[in-house]
Each structure stands twice: as structure tokens, then as C-alpha cells.
Amino acid sequence: MEHKTEKQMSPAELADQLEAMARQLRNGKFKTASGSWPVPEAVSAKIKIVEKKGRLQTRLKFKWSTVEDYAPPQKAAVKDWEDRFKAVKKRLGRSFKALTRAAGQDTLPDNLIVGQYLSDSADFESLSHEQWPEEMAVYRDHVQNMKRAVDDARLADFQHEVRDIRSAMTACHRAFK
Image 1 (cartoon, rainbow, N blue to C red):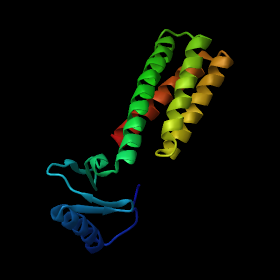
Image 2: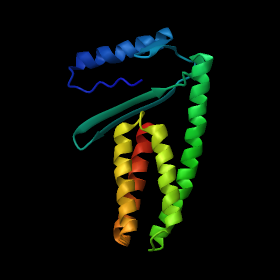
Image 3: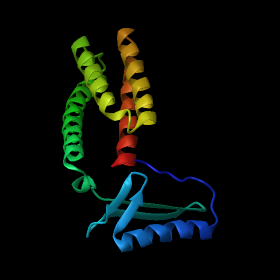
Image 4: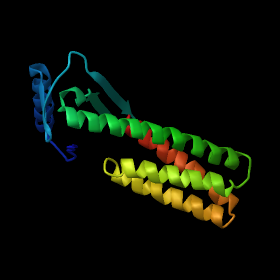
């Protein structure tokens, strides 16, 4: 479950939000919309502070797995989803590599490669659309554009869409890893 706050705040309001999170971390229980979660001994954290060209930007990210605190049926469902997701991503990576190879060789891919990629993309979307609906909509548009370019034998457009898909994947991985 996601909770996102994006608004103008006074420095005091921002400090209150950060202090509330800090208290939860120190107390060992972190509350979210989906429950209250024990804080482990070690937390993966990333803190970035950058001042560049007159603009200060910070990024705070911390995470830990909550799966161990799930009831057995929910734990099994998460494990099943993770296993299926990893398998689909592996297949998708292989089929995208074949598209990339064709684009790099200045050729259009054969229909078998395109069909495999479309099938892998559909499987990926079925596992991902609930978690990342906006990103999946962008991805789907690029995949459809790539398919049209191949169908219409437009090599330059195909190559362009392969680059766009790679850029979208890179941005998505950067944001969600």
C-alpha cells in the first residue's frame, strides 16, 4: 500500500513529518495504511543531498521486507508472485535482447521474436499493472508503437521505439529498486 505526500510545506511541517517517522523507527513499530510493522535491526537506507545550480534537493529512502510478518497464506501468495515476476522478467529480458540485437544490426526482427516479446510483455503487464499503472501505460504505448513500426516495415521507427523502451525500463528500474 502506497502513501505519497507531495505538497508545499513550511519547514516546521516537514520537520514534524520527519520527526514522526523517526519516532516510529526508534520505537520499533512503523505504521502504514496497511498495518503496523516491526522495524528490523538493520534497515536498507539511501540518503542523498545535492545542491546544484541554486537548487537543494534531498532524497530519503529506506526499506525492509514485511513478508515475515504476513500470515502464511499471504506469505505464500507474495512468494508465488515474486517467483512468477522473476521468471517473466527473465523471459522479457531475453526477448528484448533479441529486439535490441535486430535494431543494432539495422534489421527488422522476424515475427517470431516480436510475437515472443509481445507475449512476454503481456505476462509482465498482468503481474505489474496494479503496482505501477502509470509506468505500465507508458510501456504499453511504446510496445504498441514498436509493433506498428515492425508491421509497417519502418526500421527507423522500430529502432526509435526500442531505444524508448530501454529508456522507460531504465527509468522505471531506477525509481523502483
